[in-house]
Image (cartoon, rainbow, N blue to C red):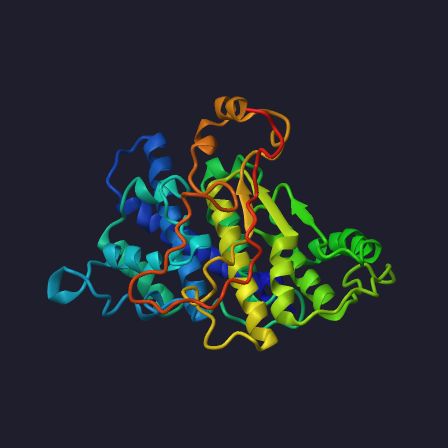
Length: 372
């Protein structure tokens, strides 16, 4: 059993998040018009969703624990040395952006609704108190499928509590067993056929929050570290064997270099980058060669999954100028490709230098080969 498949776990969680979304929306100043109601719901959903991502990160000790403590003792410049709840929550959520691959989660070009308004301190404190008290842990045990550190649940929650505009992108989450079946029928035969190749290259042109990318990373980790791969859902299907077995420290860069994704919605892509970065760090720790606790601020800073933000139907078909006319917002989006001049790789002041880089430093050019 996996809790992501258990409606007795997921449905009460989603209902509670919807309830808090309504409470936050009602606390945001506005009018009684339908359009303004939709605006306030979008803002509230952005705050509530990112609080869920933060709770997941805190439950796995990826960041310091503040939300699960009811935001108590959060330092600030307000009354009695503590920040107002809405400021404290924003500061705590900022801990999710300390890695170069996750720096866009709160960026206004990626998470616009988060910057369109603020809920009241009372509504935010009620949300924080719920996370500190009645809310379930988002770190859970599994007997099948993706572990909780994969962020599968927070990927699903984006669809569950997102605003209507994001649903227009047809965001639909793939169940893990469907992803595994697809990989059984595609990745395993490819690994067997190209067993002598250094990399088994994959791409998901509609990556969403990264479900398929996460499972592909898991398959490729098994392939590179054992030299064999057996189907997980397509019972009786073909297996792959005879691959070159390499040590985990050198397998991780190959896993990250083998997985590419493209997603048209910026926030959805940012969530996929977060999940893939954390899961790569998790693989390193399970292999036993990464030391210390798994935290966002200690994952090597140039371990960056290649998840581009773009319209994959136009990539390779139009020039950059033509693309900009169709998607001006995406064309101007910072951090839209794998890496570039607008990616901050600097180590924050006061933090120790990270471990040596483990990812192949190669840019994903979204318009490779297309004339200007």
